[in-house]
Image 1 (cartoon, helix red, strand yellow):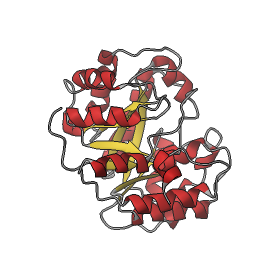
Image 2 (cartoon, helix red, strand yellow):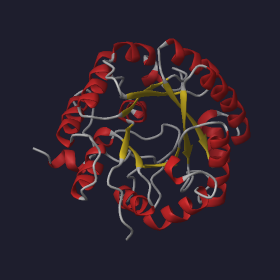
Image 3 (tube, one colour):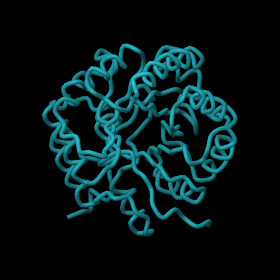
Length: 298
């Protein structure tokens, strides 16, 4: 094993990627309180909501209200997912200073998720990135189905690298290589990163894992060994993509922190405070959260 990084950045996606898949609508005030608790936990980046179609993702219909209500701490990045220029306009009106766009490495998933081919989506995002850059807004890129597609099966690392390079060319500052349905295993991580980092810098590459098959932490360890220093996670293990069959919860922030703390890797995030945040939002849902650490914490 190589020398592991001394510090890692966590992108907390629970309020957006976590809640978007919940059937029971969470009250706006509770979403605001959830974000504020995550801020108090020490997170430096929190994905707050998404400016998407309320018909397709009803849970995100109150994105503007949530952004208006949160207590923004200086130095913390509060981000939003944006699918198109209409969403960007809403985000700008809400005072968002950083957005994320989302493409796919699989044609079929792209069509099912956003009703556009990969090429069509990248044309849309070129306009979004251009307008965002002109407004002084930073743009992060998500790349879905990098380790497997629910419709097509295996996805070639070369295809992942090709689309990642095209996102990078649009001006995104970072590409999050995502395991949308939780099929990745540690043996894949280096192969995918080998291909991707021939196209974009390792320092601008993040990883996003789901824990569908219980391999998310092993995949993170493989990513750490490779030199990746930014990982997405979701408080309590909330989430999954509503348009990806079989996409169980995201990697739980508590489980990730427990491992990183044990390895002596700094994050600046309090495990106890994240547990408090997850326990709060769990009371607003109709089920328990899957984080293993959360289930055993006193």
